[in-house]
Image (cartoon, rainbow, N blue to C red; front, top):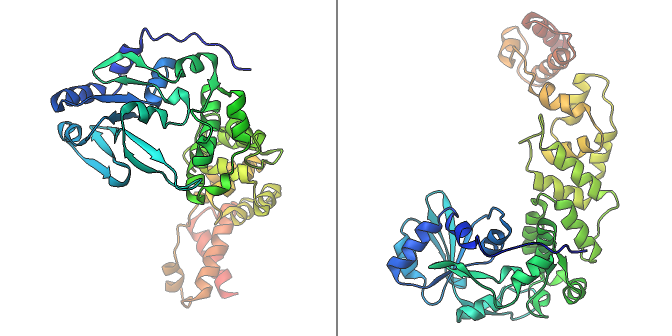
Length: 373
């Protein structure tokens, strides 16, 4: 059940004025003489008192003067009349106010210039269809009742064809619901359950699922998609998501692999090779290295999350063990170039891992014996 929240617009102007890059945008809009609006997530998050990821601006008319006034680098996307400008270490997305039409369900939209009110009306959810004028950030522009929905913890689409036109919005719905604690209102839920993800390209679907996998509460997002009948989720997937996410936040796994990739693998279900690795109980360090070496980071992380505790030691100690000798040492000692060199070095490494070759001399002795066998 959605929880009614106390959200006031009183600090909105101050919060937006404090956003990184906003002061430069406001000054540039003034120099360019254009009416620019901050839209979407930045406004929503400012109302909630949350940090925002980036600034999205909409300009009614040609955005070129604003881009010129901002200076610096900019990447322009002509098809959608959008651009990304860099302000120091910040990025600002700038778009011309537009309307959209979809030639077929799931296709990329065809855009045409429009009034700012139409631009807000084309958006996905009411909570993302709020804005402020850059010149007056304290005055909320909210023609579709987004503030009321935000207060009620409610997720509501703007029109009935929203998910048919762009099914990736259904995946975004799971992301916003999980992150912001929102629940779809009845009509939105009905349309969510009827969404056909098969009409959208696999690349776009994968990109949206990747964004969901990177969310702090990714488990909840994927469970919602499953509840809505949009994906199949194994019964143990939710717990595995939590376990692998926690694992990758602590040494020695922290930084080893991108958490989103591991979460997606958990959602799809670990392959048989991962379960086989997780079930292994190597009797020695060398056996552990033989079992783990050559495996991908995601595979190792999932196997560890499924119970292979020995992988902690593999990661922190065993995989980095190297020999003091090299193939050149064996050749200098009379071993012919070829497989014998590799055989000798492999035998010496196994011995070193298992504590049987504590010195360089021990390594060389064991390697020569194996190379000659």
